[in-house]
Length: 101
Image 1 (cartoon, helix red, strand yellow):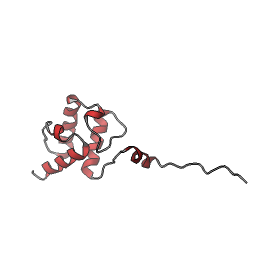
Image 2: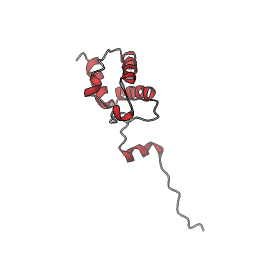
Image 3: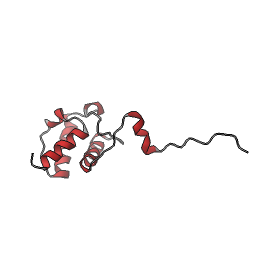
């Protein structure tokens, strides 16, 4: 009879929840998250992470907004990043622009 405890099984997809990570919740957030990961060369970006805290700068913002224009077919001014510095905020603005607002 083995009296050693059962090994702790940790699901990798649940780990981000332990440190405040918020995964994309909408299709727009998912696309924007993919764009940010590519531009910032990161494996994981939460939708509430602040762009500047992730090392973002104006050069990368230009790349990101170019990719957003290509992905969504909308031209959004880069100045929006100052008032919408998270994926969640930016995705909401993109959806607003796509609706014509």
